[in-house]
Image (cartoon, rainbow, N blue to C red):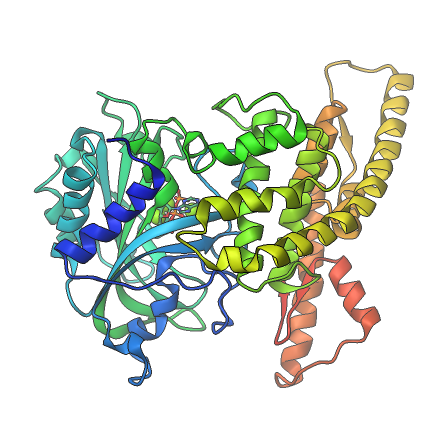
Length: 501
Ligand code: ATP
Ligand code: MG
Ligand code: MG
Ligand code: MG
């Protein structure tokens, strides 16, 4: 039988409930309502944070859990785990994705966690063991952390030594955010290509050799200020990319070529009349139509789930992240795929239809999601044209000046950082969009200069934050004018803090 996405999800859940005595515990909303350290749910473990820290209210049902399993709705578009810039360019990072996870709260530890991950992949899903690699934490002197030889030794029962590889904190010490539960992890990577030995490609961002499953041994809490505190008990927290696993089981070269995204691509094609998705792989190409397909399909999922869970696009906090995501999608749709104004909210129905059985909240909130997105799209269509016009004016002047100078035909003219920054801060054009527009004109963008201006923004916002601290953490009530000034400089203003986006 074929591995439909639905069957993949169910098989994972069934394995851990039926064979390993886990309780199915539903996904938390993608918008965390009770954790100010978090913009969006970025991993399955988020909702269990009080259990890991040993501070769960004993009256809550959560406190009774010792083993849990689910498929968690995640968004990684801000905060410590931010994949927005990669989305569309590669074929295995989404802003919204599902994370399949199993957890032990002081129940089992390394031995079982690794054995069951292996059993599940090889025996339930039938993955070819000769395509797998495992990584483990190689230690970090600076942080006073030793290598996880225990994990390594367990893996050596399943894999040859050249497929069990140590890595540093960046890849093998998992942290949820600046603070929170964390610990060394061991990860499983899968080679989409058969019969080769390429350990040097592991963790190198190759679209063919991808990370699929992270098994974290939660042992510490990262405290404010950076210190690591040992937790009262040891826990297991795992997360597997549902879309990545599905692409492997469906024998596709990319997450987007699966039955998770194809219905969306069909709808996008029908709505825009653009040529169909070609399933092109390879390097980032901002001009490619495929990238636009990926961006639009990814972003409609993110916005549908986020709004259904109570977020709204706005000028601050997570709402501002959503607004940026929407603008990115709307421009790619309009300019690259030729979509008519209003196309974006018409895709909500496709997402709802596809996912409502698993996430029934989507159907309940569908009408509202459509309304919110249609409004946002209308509003951006006003700035979109203004921004386009401004861009065109500056670009044409640059090109005219360049042609009058004569000059070297091969050398590209740079679109000024100041203008990119103006488009970014005032018209809401993310810099990657400006780069796309520039490329269409044969220009580059002064990205370094742009980053300098952003750094200046950051300095300003740090000053604002410091000023706030000096006030003894008291609430500052900002005047509308101050708010607008800060926002035009990229400062994210939330109820309780001033944060830089
Ligand atoms: P990567 O190195 O590929 O960015 P990660 O190490 O940041 O992944 P983890 O935090 O370990 O990811 O999350 C657990 C699993 O979730 C990963 O092994 C991967 O399969 C999946 N995953 C992570 N980020 C994404 C994403 N943006 N889109 C889809 N799946 C993802
Ligand atoms: Mg990542
Ligand atoms: Mg990784
Ligand atoms: Mg990882």
